[in-house]
Image (cartoon, rainbow, N blue to C red; front, side):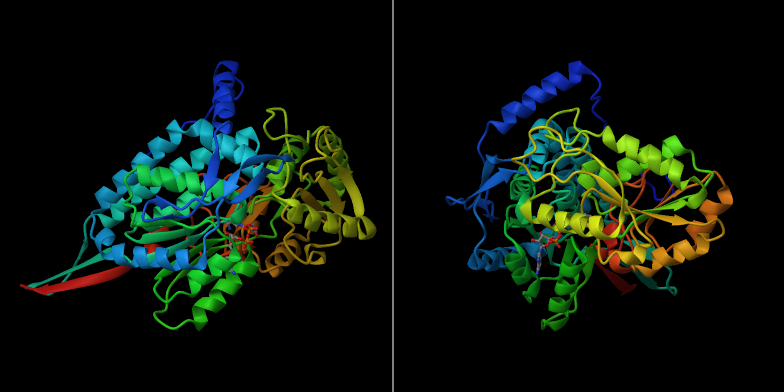
Length: 515
Ligand code: NAD
């Protein structure tokens, strides 16, 4: 056990290099994709399917993946009513009962791996390796939060007291938690938020991102199958209108949100204006993530880690690298190698194992990114651009591209796609570079490539970021191993997949008994 008393192994990987593994998995994914997926509100365990709207495959928008029936405002109110009524009973369950449901959910997701992967590929445009990682992360969240619930919510903590007095403190659910998740980790973040809230003893009203309603719906169905009582979990597919309605409701007791800074601000405003109790907002938001590479960095390793950090998942990770600071002595050499490597990436259908970069989520995302690319082409130096692969004309693809700019403050905002910006800096300017990165007021991930320990230590001491990675890529935080989340504009904490995450979902009660 580690110092937090945790004894647990993360989920096992899938060897995508072994055809004896890949072929049956591929067949199972194809079979799963043949079924009719339909997202719909689930209220009190009842699925309220109507005819619904089509959901299209971002890699080929001629293909319909499934349908979605959106939540009506009346249904949203009904869901909160049901969750409020069930709150007392669910919070009175033991941590062990709740943790057992989460462990069963982890097992269920593993047994539905092929279907969940097929959904991640087809609804969210995830590559196959990303889809494996997505399911594994969701499984890890379940087992990790189950274990944390057993450790922290199992028995009250005894406290000292004068003779004749017994004092103890215990964690309890707050009531109804609203969980609002983004499309870019449609299974992992959805499952992580919901299972954390449930494990801490809250009932949940969950709203997945509108773009990935099918995945959210399947995850909710599996949670109910795992034993979460139908009154304790309500699932509401919908957009910002339904999300806004949920957070404005006076009957809710907490909000867990992951998404953009703009939406987090809007939710914060709504919460501050509503009557009723003052409730916590757990917000995990965007980043303007940088990497600093000095002249001692190993160029091959650096280029590999830049490619992974910037372009894997088509750059649609909150942790993704946006601005690479290169020491000028090595910049030309590294950029030459980077351009060469970018020519070798394959952009195309994420269902193919050979694909490196799949589509971005939807036409709106593609158009916004392309506007930024066009503006950059007018004002910055093009460093490299990957050619689009064949069969990309019916999907929402954006080719990986890199531009040289003067500084991180040239960028107005987070550009959530495969676009890298490069800045040269001079030896001796390390502190100035870190300060410029801090000045964005984001603070999510930061990479350092250097063979000088003192450089990494100096950056670690000065940089205001949640997750710092030295001599490796800066994406793919592992549950319980690299607890994830930022500071400043990037979020409120606590860290997802960390030992204190569940505490923010709970309230503490002290009991004193005079004996
Ligand atoms: P988004 O803010 O547009 O949407 C996120 C969720 O909020 C969706 O479910 C959406 O329907 C809902 N929403 C929209 N308006 C709302 C409102 N007024 N009230 C309540 N809910 C509302 O973000 P997105 O485009 O889905 O996700 C991408 C963003 O998420 C990026 O900025 C990325 O950096 C961030 N992100 C952060 C983390 C992290 O852990 N820090 C992880 C993944 C993604």
